[in-house]
Amino acid sequence: MAPPSNATPAGILALLPKLTDADADIRYMSLNDLDSILRLGGTSFLWNEYHTCAKTVECLLKALDDTNGEVQNQAIRCIGSLTMRVPPELLAPMVEKLSNLKTTNSVDNSIPATALRVFITSFPRPVVGVQPTKSTNEAYLAISKVLIPRLVGYVVISYGVKTHVVPPRGMLEVQGENMLDNDAIDVLIELIRCFGSMLQDAEKKALQKSTMTIFDHERTSTIAKKKAVSAISLLAIYMSDALLSAFVSNMVESFRKSHLTAAQRRLLITMVGSLARTVPQRFGPYLKTLAPFVLSPLSEQAYQDALQDTEESGTVDSQADEVREAALLAIEGFLLSCSSDMRPYTDETIQAALRFVAYDPNVTGEEDEEMSGSREDTDDGTEADSDDIDDNEDFEEEVAMSDDDDASWKIRRCAAKALYAIISTRSNGDLLESGVLYEQIAPVLVTRFQEREENVRLEILSTLTALLASNLHKFLLRRDRVRKQILLG
Image (cartoon, rainbow, N blue to C red; front, side, top):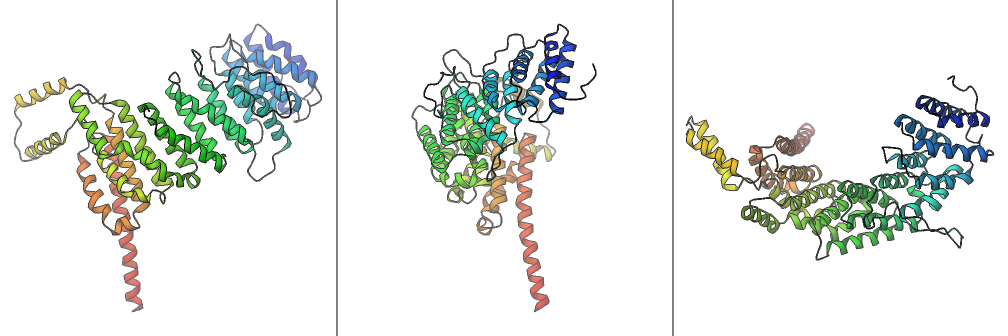
């Protein structure tokens, strides 16, 4: 099939019947030619061709439900090429049809969401402080009128219309037996990334509220909740100060709930850490309220309780460990992004990181000493008794959790990263002058050379290297000043 040499509405209409041909190759090549025609034509060559555009949209919607994956992918590409060329009046109906599309023949259920994302990304992104283009304004209007109500399940802004058609169940809603479609969150993320600066406060609040309900529902998957954290973090960039303050207040109330589960606590801590990285200057002042909630699972009492529970039950509470890992990751984000706001919590942060860099519930402190002693005996040339070795192997087989099931190394690695963040942000100031870095942190890092996990050991070496490098840099600066004084003296 020869590629089209010019772009005309008649050429488009001639290709549309071939999109339903029984041969998948013909359908694919016809879509390829359609895409070529759309790209050859200017952005306005179809603005007066309402019938042609409407018929093309209908045919592409059918092609999105094709049984052949390559045909579907080509149809998605055509959606992107058509979006910038349809009359502005057809943008809203196009979004409505895409958001309500149900595939019956396709194996891939993410096709409608992918088509929506292509539609969103086809327009020039607005730039803060720069007047949006006409096409971008028209696209935002279609998204505001159709897509946002479709996501949240209700009309957010009426635009002077007194009566509205009630939208179907929101794509972000989780009700009864209906599972949340993870692809809907991908659409939300793309919407915020591309049009976040144009969203009105009412829309931001509605999207935030719908996204937060994802965390409270037990039927939503872990992947969906992680995506929701990313969506909230992106949305925070465009929140007003009042909206961000209200959102932080809601998080504080959630932290204070008496029946807060470990999974909910982990998500809240993850969200706080993500916000600190995304909007550090605006979020930093709130750490005076939020940091204690993050440091709480890293306290000495929490550490001792964890070891005692493990000793009594013979198993590690994996959900509690996940909370500790999330807390240490959040602390690292606080230190790197909001270091000045974390100064009041310097001592607590250092002690928490030092505490958990040695956290290994499967190996007690006595066992650590015995391991060190056995290595010394071996170095002295003493041979271990074979019966003792056999007894130890039998004991290891009886341990409730094997090394393969032990995830505590993630906590130790995160603690080492937190120490690295402390060194990298405070090594040229008071902590070095007061001797905290060398008197408190360095000795613990040296003792952790016996770490059994390679990933953690490398992180510890990297942290200690950063500490030595910072001191060397200061020594060289001091040496240069002395030499300069001697030369001038």
